[in-house]
Amino acid sequence: MIKKYSIKELLNKGKFFINKKVLVEGWIRSFRYSIFIILNDGSTIQNLQIVLSKNKLDKTIMKKITIGSSIRVIGIVKKSVGKKQYIELQSLKINIYELVNSDILQKSILQPKKHSFEKLREQAHLRFRTNIFSCIMRIRHHIAFCIHKYFHEHGFFYLHTPIITTSNCEGSGKMFQITTMDFKKNKLIDYTKDFFKCKTYLSVSGQLEAETASLGLGKVYTFGPVFRAEDSNTSRHLSEFWMIEPEIAFYHLEENINLAENFVKFVIQYTIENSTEDLIFLNQYLEKWNKKKKNYLLEKLELILKFPFKKISYTETIKILDQEEKKKNIKFSHPITWGMDLQSEHEQYLVDKYFKKIPVIIFDYPCNIKAFYMRMNNDGKTVRAMDILFPEIGEIIGGSQREERYDILLQRMKDTNIDINKLWWYLDTRRFGSVPHSGFGLGFDRLVQFITGMNNIRDVIPFPRTPKNADF
Image (cartoon, rainbow, N blue to C red; front, side):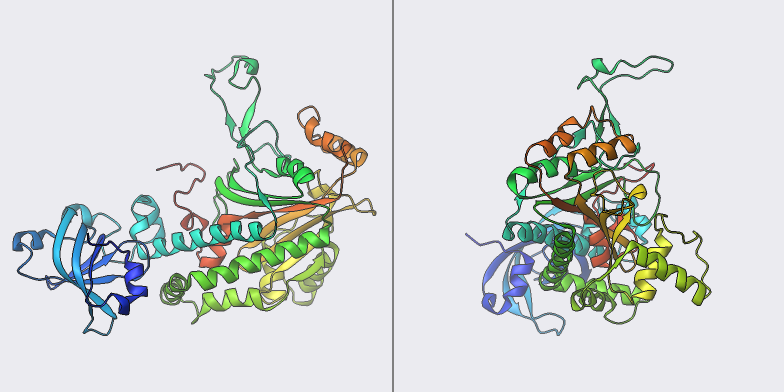
């Protein structure tokens, strides 16, 4: 029985396979001089060169072989004569699974030329076979894996929170409603006849449920899809995306901030160490096509690890922006006033210009621009909230110390028009041994976007869901 290996295994341990008979399978990336097949199986960005024996393959079949065709090869591993690869495979037997019609190939993104990312999205079912997208997906895998690794090693329990919900922890109305009812115009809707006998939605966050779990398990985290029905056609927004949300009992804001910084640095360090080949390829792509400076991507990631994140209060932030505007004659589109919600232009200036691309943690925001569950400070004007801003993409983490005091939480819910009847269970947790607790939410796809250096978040998720687009 001839053993099958991935191309990654063969290339990583090339010298141990010299003169051994092996089996590989994959898709043809190129076919040169009717002799050399360049094969890839998705396990690595690197390709394996197959050297054909002309006597072993029918010439009529050789003429039909095209890029994208899938094959099975048995051959002998040899040290390569060429300088571009250490080993190659001398073919003994080739089986063709499926040949790609040359006319179809011409219209697809598998055609070997530069395609725009917009074009790649139009054929999202094929873009996994492109170098750029396969790189991003492998990196996405390593990031997801190390997130679970980090929390497991730090004593957290993984929690599955519901995707179907009746509540909106963000307090906005921009949610996707789900129903089995047939809506008709001018007809009074009786939701007691719906599947769940009430209005239900796709969840925007698992935070509230995770909080209740942390008040019994100590440390928990969620990692799953969330949904926002916002009509945001930007390079940083999706309608369906993935969120990481840890919640920790007996945690104050300062501990929450330290956890968030430590966590993000761990993920970036792990990705650098375990996705080196793919990051180098993306780095070369950015240099060539986006005109970025040499080693741009790797230097950007190393900078995150090198220095502590800057920590400033919201009030200090407003002072800095106000002074910068006057001193450097900058004109922001949104005027700087205390109590305003910071806009992208403010965040980007603060991180990219003022702090020279060092991530910034802003804390103690005005209560009127933050959610009801955030702990009120003694000044009665601010809450124990924190946001982490990254270079280029802005906010990547939002979190807070949660309001653990029953009376104050109840009043905040009333002040912000939160339906207490729907969230009675959340309020109830403050009556059974309530404790200080904290947590944050990190947009997984936005983190992948930052690490890979992609300009658009639609290019770091397999099948993007955006306004007016739910293809595939």
